[in-house]
Image (cartoon, rainbow, N blue to C red; front, side, top):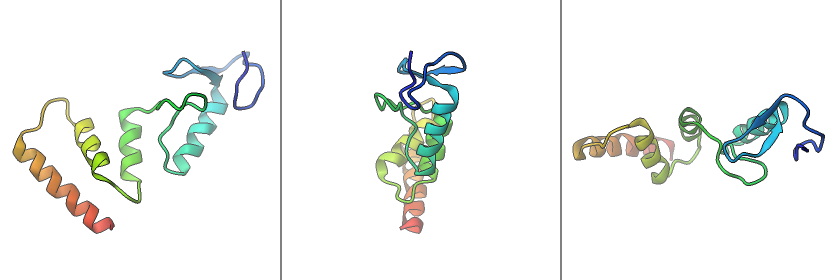
Length: 104
């Protein structure tokens, strides 16, 4: 098996991503770090499927220069395991709307 990042054979210390693609552990770690440094979501270099945890997604959202409402909704839904009530949604909307106004 060949690592498509470095084009060397994978003999040991490999990582299998959620999408089942395999890479050298150090290669995929560097790939994810490079994506993180330019505020991109970690994804497979081969198929681009997101390989991100909830913690990583929240970190990504909070480090964006421009936050759109899709990110805000995703952020709210990631924080909750149950449905929000209308009043909580409205207060969350107000809170994030204030953040967006501060940022922009």
